[in-house]
Amino acid sequence: MMTDTAPNKAQTPAPRGDLLDVAIVGGGLAGLYALHRLRGMGISARVFEAGNGVGGTWFWNRYPGARCDIESLEYSYSFSDDLQQEWKWPERYATQPQILAYINHVAERFDLMRDVQLETRILAAEFDRSSDSWTLRTNKDEVVSAQFCIMATGNLSTPRVPDFKGLENFKGKWYHSGMWPAAGVDFSGQRVGVIGTGSSGIQMIPMIAKQAEHLFVFQRTPNFCLPAQNGPMEAEREAAYKANYPVRRQEARTSGFGVSGYPTPTQSALEVPPEERRRNYEELWQRGGSIGFLSCYNDFLVDERANDTAAEFVREKIRGIVRDPAVAEALAPKDHPIGTKRLCLDTGYYEVYNRDNVSLIDVRNAPIEEITERGVRTADGEFELDAIAFATGFDAMTGALREIDLRVKGGEALADVWEAGPRTYLGLSVAGFPNMFMVTGPGSPSVKSQMILSIEQHVDWISNFIDYARNGQISRIEADIDAQDRWVAHVNEVADSTLYPVANSWYVGANIPGKPRVFMPYVAGVGVYRQKCDEVASKGYEGFKLTGRGG
Image 1 (tube, rainbow, N blue to C red):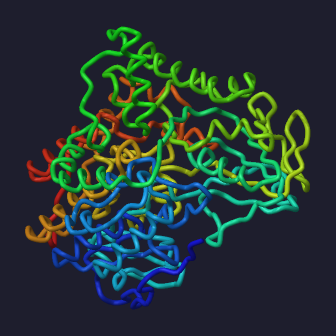
Image 2 (image 1 turned 120 degrees about the vertical axis):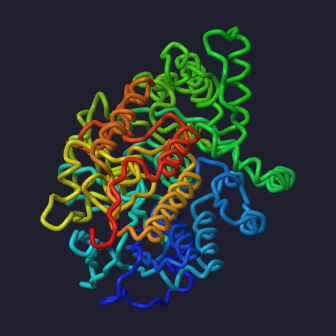
Image 3 (image 1 turned 180 degrees about the vertical axis):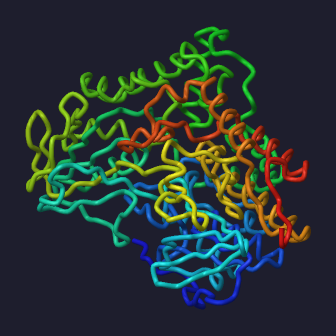
């Protein structure tokens, strides 16, 4: 198992009197690339990371079976051709330890750690209009000053532990997928309960089932799951990718989901003969991955009848894999169109329910009433457990930002401004919060895209804007409220033209009690979004108020 040890851990303390050009909050994929990009432009920047190692979500999510659901050769940085040519991915879909090793390699190769401060959580950040600068306060009582602040806090970085009655009384051990022990957990000989069947649950369940004496899966809502068809990286596949990387990367930048190899569909699922449509779905199933299904027909995500042709195909697959008809039916989703929640990838997930030591517990019809000293009690009875693994997800997209006391001096905190839901301009900036940028914030493609590609696009755009401001003697950048309102309306209009808002997903915050129901990602496509951002920049950063020094 991996440990928390990070390379080049020694670092200088945060500056107390000097003014940084940019403070970067978060040392994941976004924070590290922002540091590299800004430093290459001669801009002073420092990363502040709460963990004792870099990697962001790939540092914290160490649960068994954790791996990326985008192919390794796509889910990687493109800013350095030498890097993408030299790195060898061992599998088609990389595991968490493999991705973390890659991130640490990048940090070391580009000498990033000398400007990364670990074990430093930003508790508060305040902007002063009189000096046009941010003052950040850390958990170590340090004070950091910077003209600009980039929030690279991640979309899935605030774990949600449900507030089940009695959890504090449980005599066994409990874990959360987003806070898994670095040393791993041995479930051998134990009676284990997994609560949650989203992506992390679907990945961990087959792994835990191999160890546990008995595994109880507590499912409230079944999710659609497609096979990854994972395996060792094929030399021919790797060579072909690397020989064609420039073309593939450009294709990804203009695509819908930020992944190459899936051209924009032109056919309606309803206009294709049923036999041809089924043959196509079967080929996509055998190919593996989720992007093929999401990109197969032009009405897949906008017409419920078209969508149901794929949904029923997957339900039939589930019924063919799971031997117990009642269990198969319980695992077959019927309450949301396929793809409107995160479309999960699995390796042996449905097959695990054919094991004698695995039981599926329906907590929709018999809800969990409390966690007892001995286990979990539902409306149907008590299940004695030695350990519980919560796969209950995150306060997605806004949680990490709302945890920081972010405000302009004398003004409201961002958490209060967003009380009715997040509002941004381009998912990059928030009106009323000058000189602050977000990487893959709400209102951008973010989680509905290949995240590293979107990270690079955001960081490049922000870096260019900061350079533009510096060269133009501009000290303050602030999104215009009217431009923000228009963007929010556009994001909502696009979402409402699709099936996405139909589902009770974490895309709308449905997994967090009391969180306003707002569809957060921008789903017109990565290529469309990139074009809109480029247009804003080409028009002198239209929609932003720019204030010169002393203005």
